[in-house]
Amino acid sequence: PNPTTGPVQINVHGIDQKVDISIVNAAGLPVSNQNYPVPSSRLVGLDLSTFFAGLYLIRVQGETVDQTLKIIKL
Image 1 (cartoon, one colour):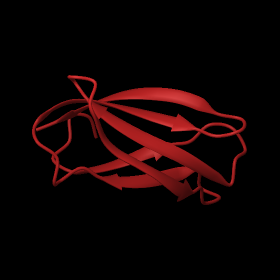
Image 2: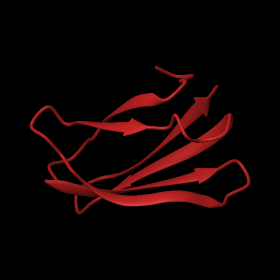
Image 3: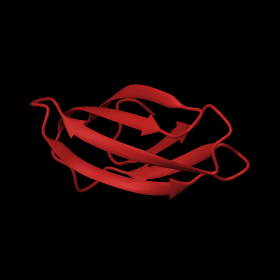
């Protein structure tokens, strides 16, 4: 859900088996950058519960995907 208190499900477009997911805060500072496997459901779960409240940009990158999402953490 958006806004969220922590758990987020990202629907990954494209056909990649693995993607890099980077998260930056509203000031543009990176707070996370990890590689994730993409299951057949195309849903990748993230946990933002340890992040401070605010706006975050989540960028999903792979060979066939490059998408950016806005998430509000409560």
